[in-house]
Image (cartoon, rainbow over all chains, first blue to last red):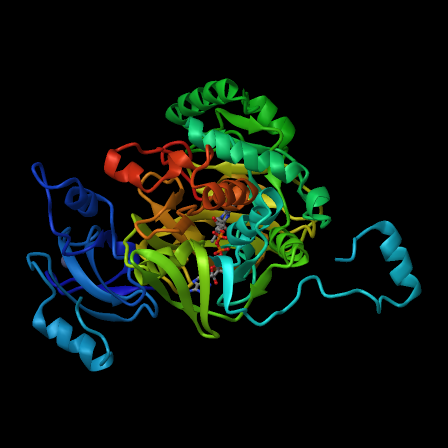
Length: 106
Length: 414
Ligand SMILES: Cc1cc2nc3c(=O)[nH]c(=O)nc-3n(C[C@H](O)[C@H](O)[C@H](O)COP(=O)(O)OP(=O)(O)OC[C@H]3O[C@@H](n4cnc5c(N)ncnc54)[C@H](O)[C@@H]3O)c2cc1C
Ligand SMILES: [Zn+2]
């Protein structure tokens, strides 16, 4: 069972209490952008095998959206943080690098 | 290749079965091939087979990081049907289903195709209207299906409970020619036939990089060294994004876990496949007597081949409501596979931004049924540059908004 700590209410929630929301930090492209950018935003995903930044919602709790850094190859959770964060925060990156020295944010 | 037949069995019986040869060779890779397929699952092996059989291209290697058929092909619940809604889907799935009918003879390998029939239950008014629509679409497409009444459902499957408290059975979409096949045998049969044509199936060999020269694929790097190729086919299901990344492009795919389970073996009690999409579960009985059960996929990205327990619980709960007699069955085994999901729940059989590099993926939760048809189409695409069965499934459909929307046609993973 996957356990994630909601950064808003502090509850360590089981995945049955949460809803997954896909890849985080997508750069939004709208009308006026190139077809390629728009397609990329709507459909293309990194789908990393390894460190993955993703959106979750504390659906059966406080109801808030938040973000998590997790490894899709081991299910290890590196940390969760506020959804109002345009890119992965420094302390999360440091936590990941402490455990995965070869990893860097691409 | 030694032909399998009743005479061969008799002959071997006299010699204490000492004379059987290995079903496929275990070669070391050559320096260069006309075509390389990455992934020895059903789709990769079928692609290689039809490259040889239909186009005479036999200087082919199939590269597999584990053992052949050890991915989703060896982990699925083997439902075969072709009652999809959209025309391009009907074309490729029906081609596939019809190839399954004669595949044992074609491969000289018993794949145990069992056209026992598939019922998809309608358990809400909405679902009923949806299946009536699919039945009409199927008759236009030349796919034989029929909407049947609850009484007919009960006749075909007496262990079903029609008047469930939440979701009574209102009818079903019946495809008499659907059914199941032995999943491993499909992979083994294709592998044996490929090997007999002189193709190299290289197991325990992981692809780690894809080399390009001026935008054209030239070689792959593997744990057994560098291997050159003129054409490359990527057919790695759940690992598609990972391998595409080696060739420098992204895919509209997310990888998630899908699980299945089987019960202890019991006496024959069910000779059709039943899918209950509203409550999220499906069941059939294997030749050994085990009830083979599957349900919904997880919602989050995962490469571990382990799924979440609550989905097993949800599936079993749904099926106990539909088949009350299974409530005291013990479950023997449970496992997971990593499935490659696209947004429109249809596959991708396509050229890629890299010249001479092709990809076949996105079969998600339902590609076992498609193995022969997909291999047929992918081989044609790789040999000729286009294929009537594959063209609609190109990668460009996302940019062009030409989705082949099957996500509403079947709510459950299978
Ligand atoms: C639990 C479950 C139930 C299912 N039930 C059904 C069903 O009832 N009916 C149905 O039609 N479909 C079903 N499916 C879906 C079906 O199993 C798949 O769509 C199908 O098997 C995919 O076949 P494939 O050959 O594309 O992939 P796979 O069989 O997964 O083969 C891909 C191969 O690529 C190899 N590979 C990956 N990366 C590399 C690399 N870097 N180098 C070398 N090799 C690599 C893998 O090891 C693997 O063997 C189910 C799936 C699951 C998981
Ligand atoms: Zn919360």
